Length: 134
Image (cartoon, rainbow, N blue to C red):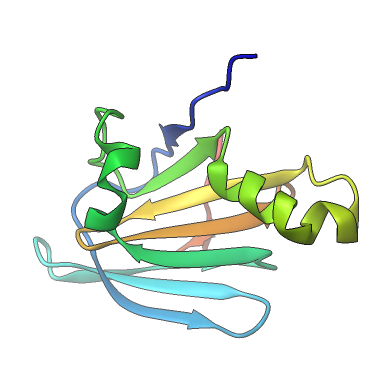
């Protein structure tokens, strides 16, 4: 049996290099504020009804993205997600049954990788406006 490789598909919503300013989690929603030093601005991403999230230093995950060929964007949708598989195997499937509607979004900043799991029906906001996720 061949195992599908995890792939990162860019969401064309914002370009440039950003650093993490603030991460706020209120036990339901996740707000991530990012700074751009190039144009001296801050952007805010809002993820509603988060199922799970994690933050890791990007250099610890170098093997995951070194072959993607494209780490110049900020937001990605991850297909064949190892994070979703891990969460499912850790008990989500047993607690909630069908978990096929979960989506894995990934923020790639200049120092961190922020993974966010949401139900497929949830909308992500960028500076208060819904992002077109294609």
